[in-house]
Image (cartoon, rainbow, N blue to C red; front, side, top):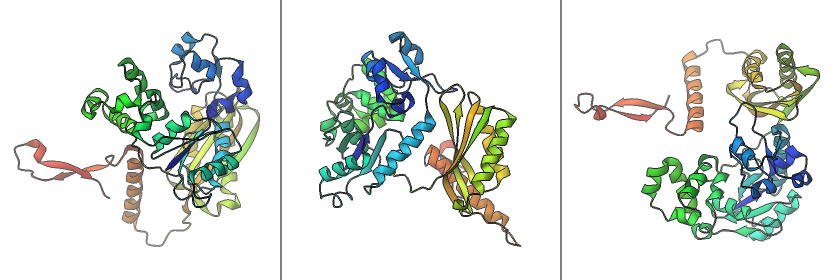
Length: 391
C-alpha cells in the first residue's frame, strides 16, 4: 500500500508568505522568468473562476483581470520542503518527494512499527508533520494521489484501484507532468472521468494521443510505475550576502569565493561534488534556483567555476545574495595519479558514466549501437538492427 501526503498549494503558500494571504482574492504563482508563460499553483478563489495550474498567462488574466501574480520563491520552497521531508523520514519512511508539496512512500514495512495497521502509520505521519495535510492511500502512486486530493485534512482516504478511480475527474492527470496537458483535450472530447478513459480501447487512445495517452490509460486503470525513493543525502551550503546588487564580473567573483569556501569545509572530508544547487535572492523580489549535475564528480575549483559561471547568465535580475549548495557527493578525490596510468580504462569508465546518465534522462533506448545481422540481404531493414550500447 502506497501512502501519499499532500500539502495543498504548498509553493503558493510559501511564496505568498502564509495561508492567510490566500484569502485576499484570486491569486496565482507568476511564470518563472525565462520559461514558458504558464501560471503555477492557484488559490481557491482563482480555481472558482476556472483557472488551474499550467494555464496560459493570457487566458488566466482574461478569466480574472484582477488575478494577483505572486513572484515564485524556488529557494524558499526547496528549503521548506526539505524540512518537511526530514520530518516524514523520522517515521522510518523512504520518501519519493521530487515535487514540492507531494510525497509518497510505501507503508508495508511501517505498519509493524506503528501499531500494525494503516491507521497507526497515518497517525505517526500526522504527529511528525505537525502541519495540516491531506493523506491518501492506494495500491499505486496515482491511486494514493487521487485519494489524497479528495481527502479531508483530518481523515485519510483510501482508493483500492480502478473501481475507486472510476468517478474521479480526468483533471487529476495534471498531477503528473508527462500527461498534464491531456485533461483539456479529453474534456473537449466529452471524457470527464477516469472511468470513461479506462473504458476506452488502448489502441484508440494510442492512435489519438500516442505514448502519453497510453500512460494516462494505465493510470486510469489504477496501474503506475514503482516508487523511486530519494537516497539518503548530506548537504553543505555557503551563502554570501552582497552589499550592493551584483551582476556580471562582480557576481562571478562572488561565485568563485563560494566555491573556495565550500571546498574548504572540513565536513566535505575530501569527497568530490556530483550535484550542486546555485541559488540567488533577487533585487526585484523573489528568488532564483538552478540545479547543476556535473558530467563527472569534481573537486577542482577552476572547472567548477567554468561550469557554474555559465548558469549565472540565466539570472533574470541582479542578486542581493548568492548561495551554493552541495546536494550530492561523489567518491573521494584521487589526488596524485599512478605513475603508469591506463588512459584507455579511464576513457571507458567515463564513457560508461555518460551512457548511464543519458539512459537515466531519456530512457533505456537512449544509447544504441548498430549490429550487422545480414549485410548481404536485399531488404535494408534486415541488414542491421539496433541493440543497447555497452562500452
